Length: 263
Image (cartoon, rainbow, N blue to C red; front, side, top):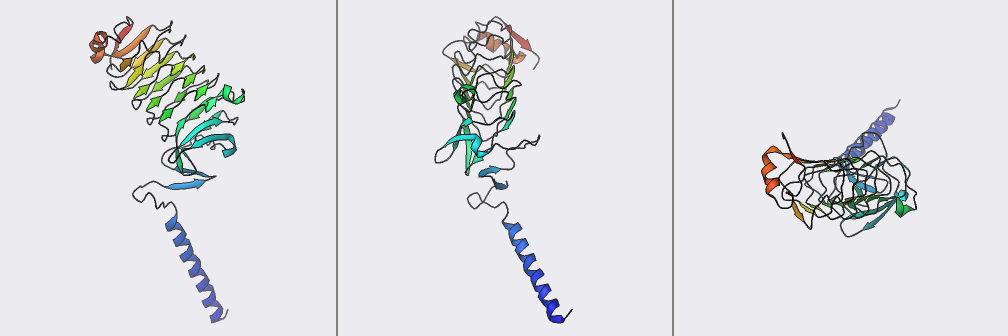
């Protein structure tokens, strides 16, 4: 091989190396978020933070054609899911904006009965509001996990769903009247803090609800009993350190089934 050819090959390799280094240095950068340490990825028009959601079971995000949403200047409201997957992994963002609210998203009646047999919905921590009829119509047979980003559970957020257990995290500050109604719930755990507000009738008409565990001081209640028309409710479990506060609170004292736990 001639000296000239060797030099040409070395020059090409050097250019390729510099191009590779330059490309690696730019990966994950986001000029609008210079102080964040997370990595940004754009994939199928989604724009999401890799440290917000991990899809451990390998289920893909829905195709954009399976989603209907509304965009404001800053956020996305996911208004309908049209797919057929049993496990649905909600994308944390679409078109560069975080998905912050679910409303009518997994409502069977909103799709003419098209969605059935959804057993698991993974909600990213971008979502702060569970809006009206986000889940409705004989779906979610195995339950749902609410992330610690949820702040508000709105009226009729869960209606006629089949799940039997729900955990409401401490991040929730408001549970509106009629938020969880006509479900198959048998057990509920409330981690909400004493500063949270639960409106009257928030858990109305849950015929199979037997046990409620509250892990905090008495939440504030406005507008009547949150557990109105729950005929099977036999126990409201509260921490031993808060038992007196519950029995002295006019909003909770009417419940003669308050019992002490060892938390």
